[in-house]
Image (cartoon, rainbow, N blue to C red; front, top):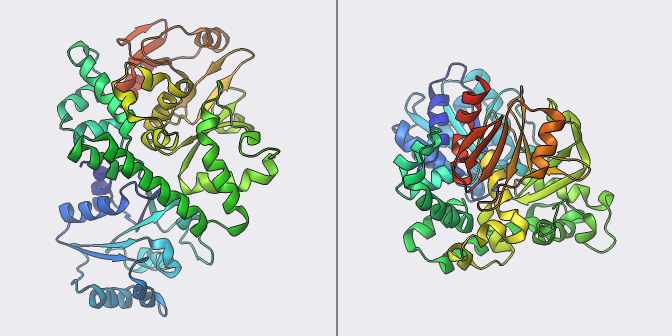
Length: 437
């Protein structure tokens, strides 16, 4: 498989002022594989330790956090001769050894010549108790599930993926094939182990099995890692997500979590899920101006899952929908399509899209911002382009650019850009092209 974040890791390796790197992401999105692949491609040797499985490694950090002493102990522990120029040091599940996190400060200050990458769950690194976190002494990167672009590359369609991502609009020769691949992706999703199962077997039942294994692992994590007072509430929220997204407007309602549930009882549990990376929160804004975060309504939001394939499996929606016309785009009132879009938007560094807008009788699925512009994005199921809400929004706010994603051919008319759902990788190039006139 090819992960696009690998190019950013290579740039980090040669960057001036390089600091130890923490690669964050939800569990099972491929952090370990990516760091090992980076090491194999760009270094002569990899010194790898798993702080969760190799319990003895914590003793390396028990006493003095002098980088030279740590390097010597690591070399003995792993049997790898560590050279500052040619060896990548990887601390996997680093949140399990808090003093390993603390040691990064001293590597940054006293031994910056060593290339150190850490993999850790979002929650564990951010909230681990008793950790003296090396604020300002580390670099961060975020790994998401595989995007559709990465799925195409893994499926042997790299030329097609790159052609679409470049913003080319002559898509007729590939349209039907791309729609079929998109439908497959919306069933399989972007969790690397699931994609691997699909590519090896082309068997949807095997895909279901792997997705359910991941869902079970997440469910077990709630009991293992969450504070005891909120672990049951976390499970209640998690189990309510399919019914939340089956609603017409998909706004999260605490009453669907449990009869009589109130926000004050469940807010901390929802925050835990968001911090762990297992859910995505899309917030309503009452004023579409930058910065969107300043106008977010804390009481109105939608909650999606990490991955479109996991949402389908969690909802127990049969994989056979992939061959049943356009059902995959309309099930759950189009929630799978919206989940896919939010997942695709998370891949972009300079475009944020975890917001939506509602008027009196109108709703725009997503608001995008690059920090300068606010751009509405509407998601239409299948080939339906009817859009009263977009018309209301454009008349009221006159946005510089507006987007509509469907399965229709691309086009541009009166400031509204139509593009296919399967062409989300082209969004940055479209914004650059049309915002510059």
